[in-house]
Length: 417
Image (cartoon, rainbow, N blue to C red; front, top):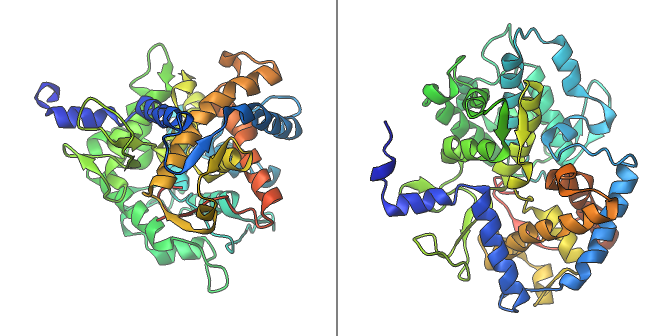
């Protein structure tokens, strides 16, 4: 039984935005508007794309001289400092089946990615087992990993390597502060927002046991069973991962735009976006959901599946990739004063910046492949993101601004970037 035929046209239109295809198509619309000089805040100079690709290739060759580049995923951060933390867990955990391991890996990745909004410039995390100190994304990854392996998210003392809905629902900002070593002189941006996001995750998981509790008590890792069920001959499309996340985790995001009863999550308004239905003027990005999709590819592969059509996902519209194009001159501000102001995440300038980032990542993938001698099938966008664009954006920011801050300042609520 399905209620599909009875859906209002508005609901159907809304659901069409819950896809990477919609992110890509609408971002390219705004790139075309930029090339035609019609954007309010940016000009676009594709003549500078080749030099930008050279910068990315230089980063790739330095970081990965063998050109054996892993996917852009949270697992890279769990290996910060050259320590393969997850590998140690995999060898010590009492899992009996590959699916048990995959649910645990899903649990860790989902919670860690949801905690991965900007940390702020002052925050540090000192790791007990190595004595090393980490900041920003790597610090958030190591801190959330430590909470996970200590059983902080588990309701079963005998099984620490899991995340249970009842624990998430009651998690407080103080619990996170303790796990993340937050203090008066070690502040973490958006602590309350992060705790509230995990509380909402817990509620969504607990109230949908048919989705999240098919093989176990309700847990975020129950999505593994949902996604595994989409496999054909042990192959899973990358876009199926994203569609499951957007369908079943949609209600965890703060209330923003909804249409036809559908929460649209990381979706924003721009007057130049054309559509033949009620979604006219709306552009989705689904940044954290896509970052999470990339981060669930490896757990599915460890469980014996092959993930295909990875280029169906888009590049990530966040400030390192966006900064790459702004700092290399591929895009430029029409009003230089915008670089000195902070901008709301729903402002036209931020929406344009994010859309141009997605579309230009598609455009830059090809010259990067050509310069490295790869065919598209052997070098998906996920490798260009990991090997180069994100790291090059970070490097250029550091070269141009000593503190490494992005070229545009965005006021985030902890759930977008």
